Length: 523
Image 1 (tube, rainbow, N blue to C red):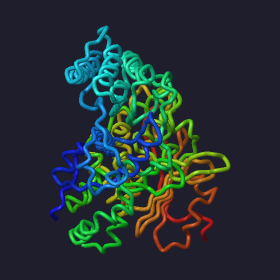
Image 2: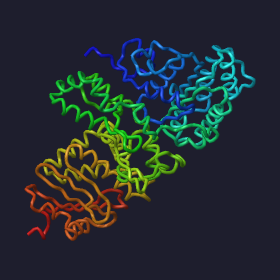
Image 3: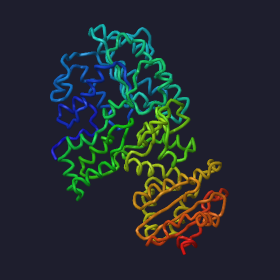
Image 4: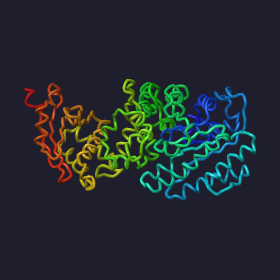
């Protein structure tokens, strides 16, 4: 295993000179730079956006030798050295208004020294436009502007409206230079995670082409199944041996764990490149993307909007919603989709609606584990243990222990959500059911006419109905009257019907009733 994996390598020149593996995307880059001028690409974190920006930078700097053996190396006939202005907003933690100013000020200073630019005024936008004009005058070629993670300050300030507004005003003025200096710009490319602020920040930049859902560039960031088989055949064989799997089982496991991202309809899925490369490098499966950190702003959005998590996991929505053309304090689905926790799973052409869902097991399991401490009385390190005990108890038929554990997780329900307790309980049950579903067959539904929860193990089937401010007897009666357990009457496994009541007064489960068998009608 002598191959060098570009895990964490974001500089194209370093990657090429040091012999790291590079999956050639330069044919797509060549298409970009020869068919347009202003672009925006939104992709989740750790998806290769910074490496893409660095590759474009090297291309416009005329570093022909770096592209030997790559598609662009043969496609490009004239290599010119353009003045490239590369701004990286990912390099700082943004806690107050000075943080954004200091970052942009420092990066402007570096280029001002290179081109000898002296601003007519001290504003960031004034210095930026003077820098562009000076660079063009000094080199005789129009400038290339690259901005990586344009929205990083806004995302970090999502819980602070005042700070976020200050960042938005600063960035709006700074980015508006791209339109004011249009005659001096050869090419501009911006990346980020979200598009919540697309309208307000880029309202003056109406020539910015958003390629986030363009099928031509769906694989510009990320790794396709075909690329895995082309570039990593030896590594997959190594992974298979290390985990005592067949080659095809290994491909299937990789696909289930890390594939499944679709950024528009009717295109092949792409793998999360970070998790895939670390897995191949280590010869071990893991939730590597989640180990690098999940932003808490997602939970803040979900809880602020009292969002029903079951609806989030499989829903139909429009392009306007997932493109985030509304306020970040409205529908949270856009930012969750754009952050990579949901993806496009299908498309209804008649209705022009997208069906969203979790892209793969790593995301679904990791996100549910991440949410668990925010919705229950447990800690991040105790969450996996609690789920493990749930699994052990349902496999053993120990219903009372299972229910007591569920009751303990719902202890200390915050009083501030008392007005929306039913939705809170549904979210807790959904999270636990999703996590159980990776180890046993568990399905949770809240629609009328369907059983709330069914858990199947090799030896038992549990049919559960939940009531809110009702009685456990009412819940059990509904199971029987609607015959929820009857489909399992002939099953060899033991069937248990369980009625559960949540109390708004105690803010917890107050009682449950267990009855064995599929019900009277089974006889």
